[in-house]
Image (cartoon, rainbow, N blue to C red; front, side, top):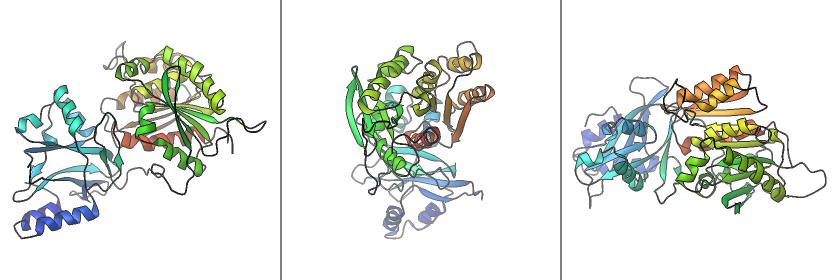
Length: 416
């Protein structure tokens, strides 16, 4: 195995000595993986990152793939997974692969362990890829946090290189008062409501109503990722005013595709049914300047569309990795980037934006930049960020907190 990793070169030179491999794994367990070493080209803005998998002696692997979110997906779309095929070091139980990555990269990752013909591990058709995702495993020695999954899949590990944006608000803090999460239904749709600590729906004449945030794909932000812990931390630190958060579930893949494709019916339901219900039940505001709608991917597209269609209800749109190519994946023709063209040709609306997209998102980066340029040219207030990561909740959970702070922190104090 040819490797630039100094640690693996040292292991290869001494692997024949008794106890060397066990000592290597004890060190890896103590310090966490992946190995992060200086850039072999001497550039402080980059690191050499080596992922490790320990073979099971009772069921040795024939091939192991490292699944680095979006980076591996790009090669899968190109029908070539060989850049992610790990190598087994001779005379050891160490599978390894190294990537030269920028020092601000964050990504979730897993391992796909194959037993059988090597070519089966490299299949890129949809059925084979779904099988890989259904069985992929987290890194048992990961130094970083984990990322929960849904649909019965295993969690992912998270690689956070030293210059990646901090996610100080992600983990629960024992010293912070916890808010209340309520699982309910509105008009047949499941909603997870997060109430700030000491919420009082109808307390006191003259009390200001609560700011409100609508999070699309709420089944991820509520029961899977527990974004309520982040909200509690933001409230406790005074980074956002007390805010009632409505996490709207998408009710299945087919329903999601229908609702999150610039659906007038869905956006009107949010504006005319969900928000009035929240005002009655939890004392939320009807002020669009203190109302945020947020989403990722198709949800990011829909958040921006909600502000376009119903600006009198949604004064703030938070889009992460928005699918602004919709409805046509090709560029520069009459079918692509419909919503961007609407903002370019219609009168300026009283709404603000927080947009972010990953530098690894080769299918979304140009369209997000285009929307930013159009909005800025039309005079909109736009906060825009490009993070070094992919189409990944490991990145989005930090960006969502930053976006809510930016959009809500100046929107009035709400209730104390």
